[in-house]
Amino acid sequence: MGRGGRLAILGALFAMSVGLVVFTVMAFLRSSPPTVDFTTGHQAGTPVDLTVQTVGSIGFGPHPTWVSYLTETPGGQWVHTTLWDLPAHTRINVTLDQYDSGSPLRNQQLGQIIGTEGTVATYNGKPESVIDSNDTNGVGHTFTIPTLGISVPLVGISPNAKNPCSVAPCTSKYDHNVIRFSFMTPGPGQYPWQCFVPCGLAYLYGNGGPMQTVGYMDGFLKVVA
Image (cartoon, rainbow, N blue to C red; front, top):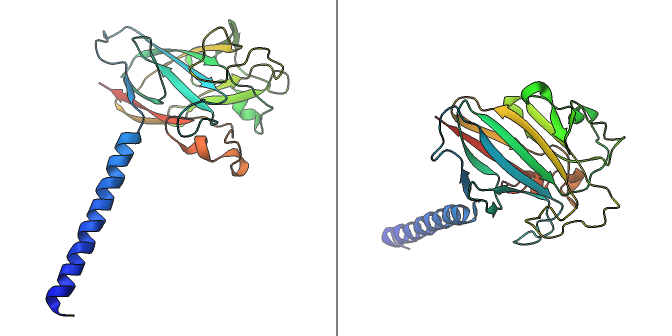
């Protein structure tokens, strides 16, 4: 084969590789969960109300059996995402509706509430600073922002619940726990958050699948000035 032929083949292979890269990037962008914006129209000095829910199975999409978080937009719509834009140096009042069941923690340190205002969270109206997962219905998930030193265990619903939710988004008519806490955002930056309770059913040690997927059990806080 002549030099021209070899160059033509190399050129074709290069074009194919570029095409694959572009296709992969575009596929990622199309599949990436949306970001819920809490910054537009925000008045400096006023708190932001962030409402999320956890479900035992999302009930739709490519992974209907996966556990997941969902986020309520400022307009009141539930979105399957774990990506948020939040204003800097602002109090965030979190309401977390927990529709999933729980189990005893493998590491009881995850039962501590840390990094929240007052180092407490309320569980169905009762303030707590630590959760004994062996003396409750167990803990299903945590809401943890490691770089900010924030972690809140999410007590599960009763394993004998009469009215569990099977398809998200779930409403208050289903059995759930309401967990509330507040924290202050720092300066601008990207802050990853995730669940630290292994809940990836059918994955090694429960740490795969939804545990490693943005939009399900981990996400990012984008804090903006």
